[in-house]
Amino acid sequence: MLNIYATIPIKPHEFYAVSIKSKERGGTIERQIEFDDMEVALAVFGKQDENARLLEKEFGIAMIFRGAEIKLMGEEDAVAQAEKAIGAMVRIHQSGLPLDEQAVRYCIMLTREGEADKVADLTGDFLLISDKGRLIRPKTLGQKAYINAIVKHPITLGVGPAGTGKTYLAVAMAVKAYKAHDVTRIILTRPAVEAGEKLGFLPGDMQNKVDPYLRPLYDALYDMLGTESTMRLMEKQIIEVAPLAYMRGRTLDDAFIILDEAQNTSREQMKMFLTRMGVGSKVVVTGDVTQIDLPDKTRSGLVDALVVLKSVEGVARVQFTEKDVVRHRLVQEIIKAYDRAAAKSRPQNRK
Image 1: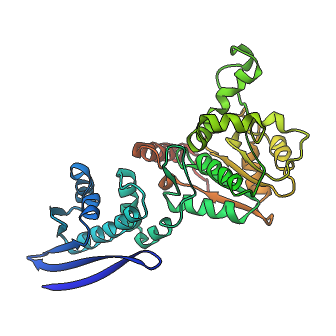
Image 2 (image 1 turned 60 degrees about the horizontal axis):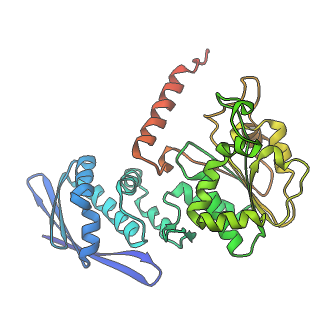
Image 3 (image 1 turned 135 degrees about the vertical axis):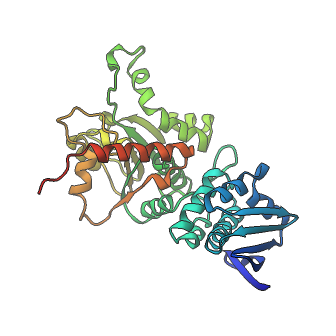
C-alpha cells in the first residue's frame, strides 16, 4: 500500500491537511482520503450524497463515505482526476463559498482543463457583505479577472453571455468604492430600447415607463444595501439610476458609472456616454453582443467600442464565456446550444 501525505494551502499561514492512501486492485485503483475535519468531508460528499453522485457520474468512479474518510475506486486516471477535483472543492469550501452543484461542476471543469490549482485564486477576500449577510465574491476565474480589471483600469468593458454576473459584480464594486470613499456617488444607466412594446403605450409617467428597463440595477442595489438604504441614497442623489438619454451634456466627477446592456447603444450613444467621464471617476460597461435588440442597420455601440478602444491605454476588456455562468446549470447548456446553432447557420467561407 502506498501512503501519501499532502497539504492543501487555503490562505496564507493556514493549511488544511488530508491523508491519502492508495492501492491497486486488478486494473483499478482504490484511493482513500482521510480528512481532519468531518465538516469538510460532509461538504465534499454533499447533501444527500449529491456531490458524490455528480463526481461518480462525471469521472466514472465509485465513492464510499465512512466517517471523515472518502474512498475513490476506478481507473487510475479517473481517480486521479476526481482527487484533484475534490482538492479544488476543499479550497472552495474553506473560502466560505457554498459547495453547490454549480461550484462542483466548475471544479470538475477546471480539473479536466488542467487548471484545478487555479481555484485558489477564488479564495481571497470577499468584495462586501450583502444586506442579508451573504458574502459577495467572484465565483469563477472569469469573474476574478473582471474584478481585477475594474480595480486596475479607469474603464472596463465586460462582455459575455447572460448569467455571468457582469452587472451584479459591477454594482458590487460600485458599492464597495462608495463605502471606501473612493467615489462620492454611483450612477447606473441603461439604454431604454423598445422590445415589443412602445414606451408611449405603457402606463404611468416617464419614470414609470423606464423603470422596467432599470429593474435589474435596482434589484442588485436592494440586495447589497437593502431597500431603505438604497431609497435614502437615491433621495440624496448619491445613487442615480436613469436611462442613458439622461446622461447627455453632463460631466461626472468622482463617480462610479455603470452602463448596462451596452450592446443596445448606438455608436453615437456610446461615444456620448464614455465622454461623460470626469476626474476621479471609474466606468464599467457591460453587455452581450449576441443579444442586440437594435434595428438591423444600426451598428451596436458596444461592438464598435471593442474595436475603436482596443489600443487605448487605460481601457480593459474582459470576455466572459459560458464557463462563467453562475445561474442554473441549464443556462450554460442553453448558451452552448445557441452557439452551435449560430455556427451552423453561418455561411461557409468559399475558396
